[in-house]
Length: 79
Ligand SMILES: [Zn+2]
Image (cartoon, rainbow, N blue to C red; front, top):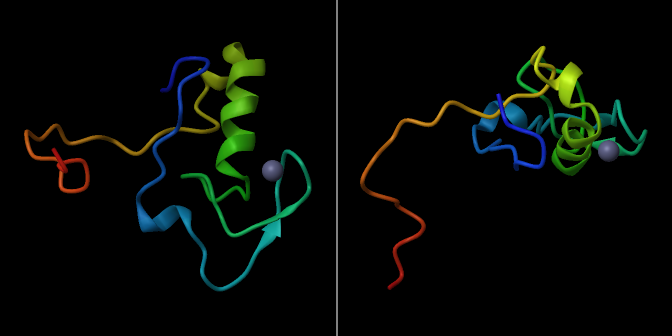
């Protein structure tokens, strides 16, 4: 569960519905993004919601993808 203020990690393709957009559950704007539970929501809206509702957030409405810890970062190695 992300702590308040933390950014969600929604890299998994399951968070992106290519077929259609739905109204965001938080701001009402169209979004192709889905929570892990299938709820339509912008990632930034979900993050803002977690910050504003830290108690409810602990119930797991929005969660980050689980992160397999690896020593190699395929996108971050440009040094
Ligand atoms: Zn939204």
